Image 1 (cartoon, one colour):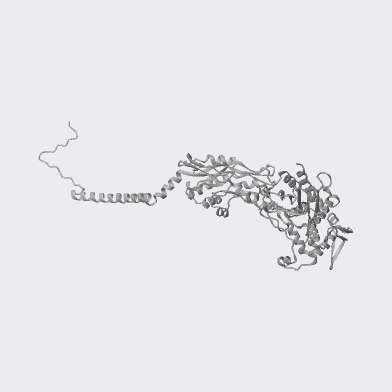
Image 2: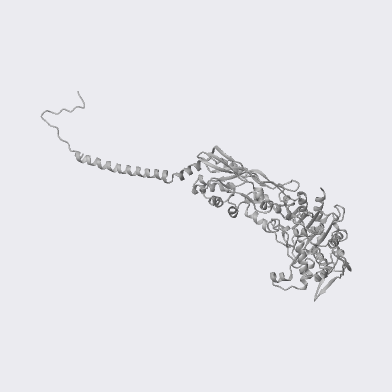
Length: 596
């Protein structure tokens, strides 16, 4: 039996079946329409691709070639090692240490991608996201150079970021050196500190690379060109993830030069220790050259805090309370009786007095309806300039001041450096002032009274002098009458501009004042120095009144008395009597100097 075969009888024809298929003509027309639509779509697509290809190759070809090369080749800045800062004996005060910094390559990601990465990096490095993004935006997201985000990564941050390196192409940790101040707070106000170049710095120095570190204060600032060095570059080929593939070339960095200061680290240490936690300042000069041996101000700050991102609390602490950021060696104070040196010069140089002149002293003198008292509330009899300086007689110098007048006092004060001393390139210097009647009228809108002259003669009233200026003043007496120009760099000592200038003070006037300053130590208000622990010295104490507070304590002096080498000026804010608070500080500085 066969299966699958249908037998049709001969007498029957197959019955036609009904079909929905189109006739052959309709079918061909339908196929043609579909083909036409397909061809049109293909043509449009090919046209778009062709246009895009032409646009990429012909119109943006050079730009895209540069972008491709930039994504493949990187120029990595090589930071120059900053020059060291050493004291006069080669002791390191500022040097460098190896550290790691975090950099972003802006071109590696879109701004949106960087926002996501910044959000993850922020808690690791402790920098807010807006600050990270601001650094990128400052240089632009199309910058071909890396942007420093953080310096001195701690070990935890280093590990955390390193573990994410595969996930964060364009985020790179680069080893470089960072500043370190091995003595901490020592001489901080003279050394200064570092920070990233500001927008103003970048505009003034177009050659500065992004992230350039510059001096912001002190020697770090005014000697920045010598210390900074010249950055170099490494040209490398990298893969798609930013990993170095091949070194193409190197331009080595040039390290900065070592800068040697006139400061003596041992003397500086002695001065700061002697001041302790008190507010005050010490300046010590070489009386022959003006080289600054000590420039101390307390309280001080640690410049190492600026080698990492300083917090707002840290910054505020520097400017509040006792103001550690303030360089008190450059701030003016009422000089008190130390100013009697200037009044002595003015009196004898005026011709109204001579080195042998004597005056009667008393418990007080009366000017108009006002009594001006002797500091001891009793007189010293009839005395000359030597005893007047030794005993610091107010009534003696009241009379000298009224005889010569405020203009003569101001003139000789300026010749001795008050109000006319250089700031040495240090920020925050406010020069002293010895007002005249005309200046009082101009500045304060008030007339001059005879009481103003009396107060000026003993360094009170409106007289203001910085510790630096006091040191210059007493150095001129010590060296025989030449005004020195204080400076901090050993390279400046031999410069013609730094040579001491004659003041024109007569030699017999200098001799009398020197004798008075020696007598102050031998039998006057500075006998603490006369104990044999240092060579014989000379000096003048001062106690300047402060309204509603304890008086400031001051001292100026020099040693050895007969062959002067070093001049010292000390102020202890609200320290009381100069002989009690300031003289012992000077003694420690002398000890450090003569210990050599």
